[in-house]
Amino acid sequence: MIGLSRGVKQIIFKSFAETKEGGTRMKRANQDIRDYAAKKGVYFWEIAMELGISEPTMTRWMRAELTADKRREIRQIIDKITDSKPGNP
Image 1: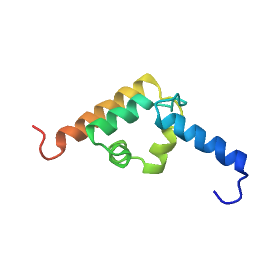
Image 2: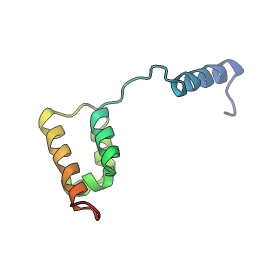
Image 3: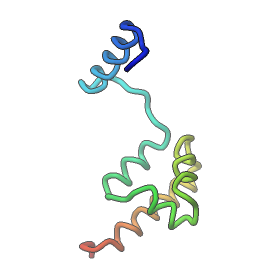
Image 4: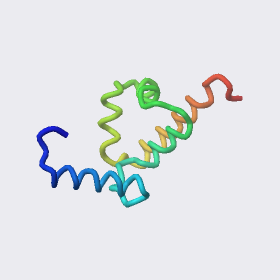
C-alpha cells in the first residue's frame, strides 16, 4: 500500500477485517449465479463457451443484474456442464 496515508490504510484494513469477521459487504450482482457455478465447480469460461461468447464478455455480463430468462439459461448451462464432467452420472 505504497503511497497511501496511514488513515487510508487503517480504513482499508478495518473494512477488510470486518468483512473477514462476518461483517456486512455490498452484494455483488448475480451473486446467486456466481455461488451456483462455484458450488457446481463450473468456471465462467466454461459457461461462456456454451453461450458462444468470450470469457471477458461473460464477466461483463455478470456486473449487472441479468434478466430472468438469461439467469435461467445460465443455470441450465451450469447444470449441463456439471452433468458432462467426469464422475457425474
